[in-house]
Amino acid sequence: MTSFSEATRVSPAAAGAAGQYQGTIVPGWDIGGNTHGGYTLAIAARAMLAQSGRSDPISITAHYLRPGRPGPVEVNTSIIKTGKTFTTVDGTLIREGKPMLKLLGAFGELGVGDADVSRVDAAPPELPPLDACVPPGVPEANPHALHQRIEARLHPDDAGFFRGKPSGNARMTGWFRLRDGEEMDGIALLLAVDAFPPTIFNANLPIAWTPTVELTAHVRARPVPGWLRARFTTRFVTGGFMEEDGELWDDTGTLVAQSRQLALLPKSSG
Amino acid sequence: MTSFSEATRVSPAAAGAAGQYQGTIVPGWDIGGNTHGGYTLAIAARAMLAQSGRSDPISITAHYLRPGRPGPVEVNTSIIKTGKTFTTVDGTLIREGKPMLKLLGAFGELGVGDADVSRVDAAPPELPPLDACVPPGVPEANPHALHQRIEARLHPDDAGFFRGKPSGNARMTGWFRLRDGEEMDGIALLLAVDAFPPTIFNANLPIAWTPTVELTAHVRARPVPGWLRARFTTRFVTGGFMEEDGELWDDTGTLVAQSRQLALLPKSSG
Image (cartoon, rainbow over all chains, first blue to last red; front, side):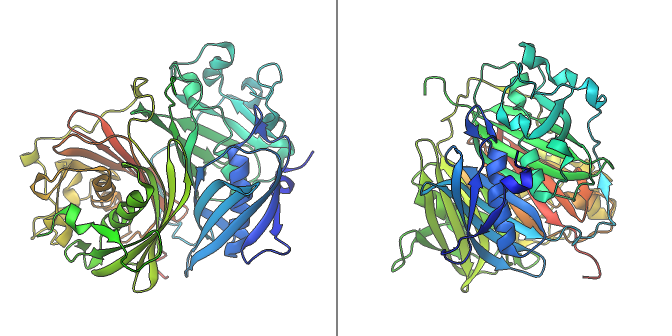
């Protein structure tokens, strides 16, 4: 089975223009047949990071244009500006000649800012021990291939929707790591911010499918090895849209990433 | 004095390529001499919206590359995809031949989603009446030209920093409208999400200047005429970065926009 770093590997296109990379959507990173959005974001971000010559993604925005399927992809990147602190990179992930993701990101070195000034008005989610949490990947509950590649374990309070008993709180919290504890870099955090079931599954609303329009992730620190704690919440299901806000914390209690995605609530008639 | 809609007007470049617009950074939309970021975002978004042929900005992300000064600007736009529901547009605002802002956005029609399904786990900020709130624009307190163009009035609890007494809460809440009550469209909301003093001014931290790396705004509804209520909060000043989350609510208590920006905490030695 391919590791995350292998499955997101990119290389400069052999005969391509400057900034063109090739990669592969590896089979098995899907949810119900569609390639997972966070996984394809990670492939594109890997290419943009390589083009930037920097060490870390800092802020990356992806617009989701078309669903994915396994097979070869290209990532076309171009540097918008190389500054002292950040390099801004434009990216397009292309599959079978069509753009699947369009991206814009800032890359740099984590630690470039003044980390001595600190103030956190939040805490990581309180989670029961791992073996008291619920893996969405148990085949009988959720046979999605993605869950052979990652380990996500939900807080029992947020796992009721598996049994048709949504909590009523538009929230998902739980533990996360890559399978076999593969170490996570900033690119892996871009997968993790999209790796939990949608908050809407717990909201007790008549909505089954909420396609993501746009996702922005901020990588705030490199995580120490080990499990991450994740919290996803939705406060506004209104006007035909909803946001989903994510936080990832590492084992030292450090915030390592923040995310927000905007999703459409499709009209049932449409 | 130019109105907001006049000050953000763009027109197709006379002899330009397809998707090229021209506009003007009008004098007077600055904070301490630098053109206001939300104002230049609005100019760029106006061009991208025109190019999209849609009625509303839905999600827009801007990376801030260089400070602005009054004078002519170009906005180069290109359509990435025109879908059934959204049109995804790339944009670059250029001043004196150099990119000042790089943008990526989705445009569409507000109301395209299923607005009948609704759930809001938040409330607009409770604010004293207008005349009990504090205008940052009174010349003796804050002689920024921008505040001749907009009316922002802070909750007294969040206005102590004007007198050197920050509240200790990394928060700004208050009322907002354009001068003379000019009606606000989705583009005006992009100005409003960046129009309050930084939350950090109330945080009691040794930081004076936090340059914005990236700002993403989601327009959720067109506001009814009248004052908006605004809330800006920062939960994570950590790792040398901070986020600032914004919410705008209209007079009916409807969330009309959400925003998040990532700012750098520069090292004082750097």
